[in-house]
Amino acid sequence: MILNRALILGALALTTMMSPSGGEDIVADHIGAYGINVYHSYGPSGHYTHEFDGDEEFYVDLEKKETVWRLPMFSKFAGFDPQGALRNIALMKNALESLIQSSNSTAATNKVPEVTVFSKSPMMLGQPNTLICHVDNIFPPVINITWLKNRHLVTEGVSETSFLSKDDHSFSKISYLTFLPSDDDVYDCKVEHWGLDKPLLKHWEPEIPAPMSELTETVVCALGLTVGLVGIVVGTVLIIRGLRSGGPSRHQGPL
Image (cartoon, rainbow, N blue to C red; front, side, top):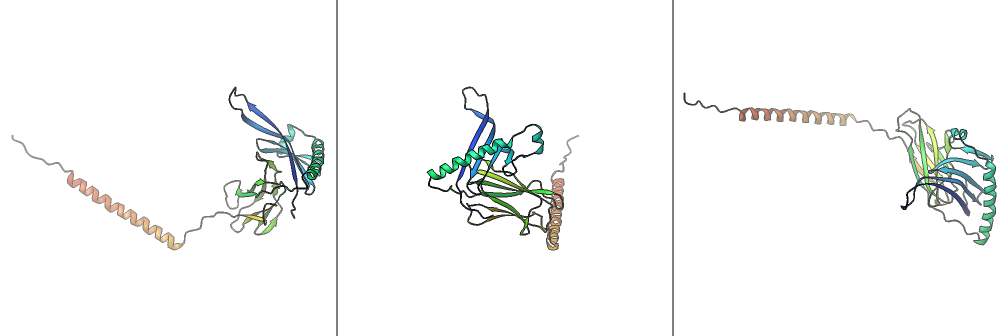
C-alpha cells in the first residue's frame, strides 16, 4: 500500500464510570469510550469503535455496513445498529472539509510508530502458537501491517484489531499471526507509516538453546570431577584433624 499524507480529524465521545470518593480526587475504576469517530481524507475513509478499559468491544465495517464484535460472544448480550456509525462518519466528513479550508490544507503531524513482536505463549517447537505485533504511538491512524515468513508475505492465519485510542490522542493497533514454531523459520512484522522513512521490519525467530559441543561437555565433566575430588580430599583432612585434636586427655588421680 502506497501511503500519502492526509489531514486527520478524530472526535472522541468518552463515558467514564467513577468510584465515589467524597472530597478526594476522583479516581476512574473503568473507562468506556463509546463512539470513537475518525474520518480522514486518505482513501477517503474512517472508522468507528466502542472500547472498554482500552480493549475493543466492536467496530463498524463501513464498507460492509455491519457491526463486527471483537469476540463473537459479545453479540449475544448487546447489539449496535451500524447506521448510527454511518451517520456519524457522514457528519465527520462535512466537518473535515470545513477544517481543511480554514487551515489552508495543513497536513497532520506524523508520529514515529513503535513496534514490538512477541509470542502469545512460551515457545515450544511443533506446538501451535500466536505471534503478536503491537504497534504503538500511531498518528495519523493510517498504517499497513503485514507478516513475512522467511522473507515471503504471509496472509493465512492473520488478523488484527481496529485502531485503539490513547489518552494522548495517538493510536495503537495489534496484528496476530497463528503459526507452528520451527527452528527453520523466521518471521518479520512489516510496518508502513508516514512517520517512517522506509518500511520497518521487526524481526522474530525462535530462541532455541544451542547444544553443547563434545569439547564443552568434556570440559564440564572434567571440572565436575575435579571439584568432587577436591571436596573428598578436603573433607577427609578435616575429619582426621578433628579426630586428632578432639581426643580427651586422661590423668589418673590419687587413690
